[in-house]
Image (cartoon, rainbow, N blue to C red):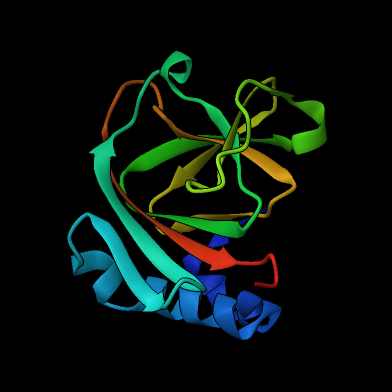
Length: 152
């Protein structure tokens, strides 16, 4: 897991050309103006999911992890707390859903506050718990850039 400010995005462009495309999108006006929903960046290799929603109590959030994609979760307005834990320390509560690329889990991890302009990068070995309120529910504009990392 990486937790950093979007102003340091250039440090992570060298992870791969696809990560570079993802960070370019996050730094562009599109990330701030695209409507909620899925937006193609580079076919099924890199795409963005724009979310405009309210954060929730931790009890209403679910631990998740992916096999095919890494998540770059960037908060563009508001504040959202997120959890992170090694996937091997978690207990699966669902079978892996190949179509949605997700498994849900129970367990415990570390919780961080992701302020406006900050991002997290979760790899397939990172279970994460997105959408947690910071004190009370509040509006958030968040972009989740999905970067294919399974080599397909």
